[in-house]
Length: 328
Picture 1 (cartoon, rainbow, N blue to C red):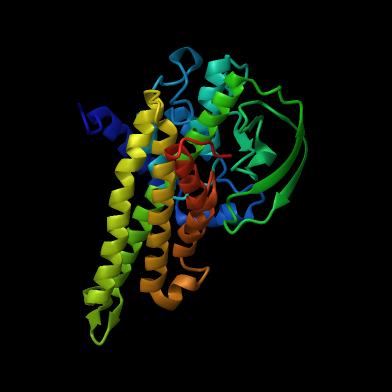
Picture 2: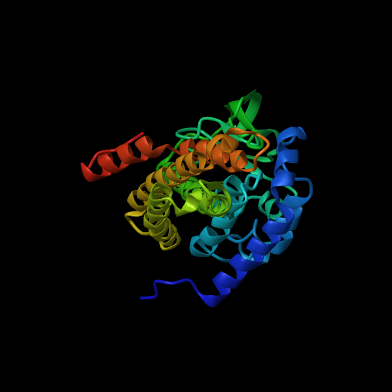
């Protein structure tokens, strides 16, 4: 059995990394916080042109016919830059749902002219709903929003809305299974983004403690700082294989998929929040200022750690599975 990614997967990830490093800078993120859309103008269309949006779509629809093992690396890169776009809701969740139903909106999604959003349990608030063309409920059905009310978010570039809706189908066994898969896809995508966020915050902190000096030496030379950063890195490296395993489970329809996804999301959330806490502590007072770039990644971390089920929700889900029950 092969336990590593292929050369092609790594090359695609690196290409997306280079693109996002150039096009999704902290300066552009700051613009997204205040431009009224929470997004970077033109970036979604460019991601669609690269094939990111339609990675899980068939070639006949303009997609790349890839699976979640390919996608997980790309989503990790979108987390590294705190991408202000509904990539999880659209590329990871909506595209495979639309493929299964041969939905007319699939081509629009793949071309980058439409996006999707999701509401329900445990999502509750729909991200970027004001620009969405496809509205999914976590019970596995499509809905028609009758009203949407914006809610405040700690992350100014992640716009959240509470939806009033109607018109979804009567839940059947098939739609319930689709609903479970929607939750698992969304949780996996968010977990992958949290890996990227954790990695970025650790890198930023390492660079900072190399330069910041006290008593004539870099603070990074202090044992306490080293221990904090080592703990953050350890948490990240323990979470990463769980996320990759969950991606494999979804791609290959593993019967233990839900267990693997909940383990991944709970641990990725914990790891990213550990990295955020360590980054803030090691930066000191400057880490609290909105003028400093770190706060962009801190706030995205705090937002995503609770999205698609917080660690407590996923651990209750694991408990229910282990005890042979169900969890709502």
